[in-house]
Length: 318
Image 1 (tube, rainbow, N blue to C red):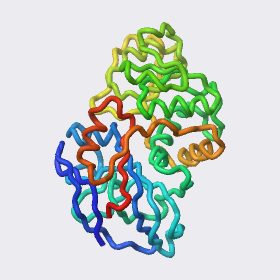
Image 2: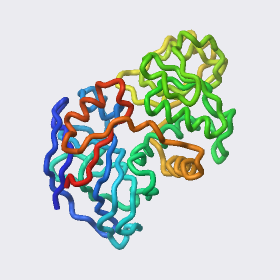
Image 3: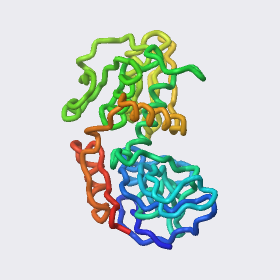
Image 4: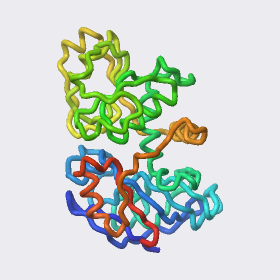
């Protein structure tokens, strides 16, 4: 069995290629892809050759961890049925390329336990579920183990108004919070669900919790806005070592926390908020291109400030 896939052979060298697929086992599904999203965080770092050493990295690489497809074959132990719409967080099924991410392909073979059924009426918006789950994990970082999220646990400031920051803001509101958002790029200050400010316009210096979704490694400006013993949660992925001056952090006893990769419970919580109408994904997918135009789509996703989220359409691409 073969598939058409996006392959990153080296930094800034990306093309569609035909790859062989591993044979499915009894716990695997074969999924025909419908859509996949392009990440402007970790995938951009791989594309530019700036990704820090990370387990499983290397070239050639199939990118993509925000994919949605339909099960066309299901093993007897896969736990899913043919015809189910599923979210695919990636795949490692390629003979000739690494699948550290692996979701940007017309067809994949993946273990059923890694797949999450999604409502068909979400359409292409379902590619946002991984990012939404990542945002949920970040803003609930301070929630005590076993407790339900409450407004006092949520960040009062979200830094960055890309898709991750917008999802963090929407989730914050859905859980009862009242966040402020910072964004340095004027063209990205529109379309917010809460106040979106240039940092210079915000005089507050007593935020108990700040969530950074910008990926900017210099933390001094954020630590300066923390209340005593406040917490700064790092939600992005940082290509450079994070840095900050110690004396201001020492004076306020700053706490720096890292939000790791989303967990299945985070995805379930996000899906529940969508199902009940408390979380909307509208307006976040700004650009779509057919998978055949993948090379151009990746360049636009990484360079066009107006492109919040680029989606590849894989229908009829196999």
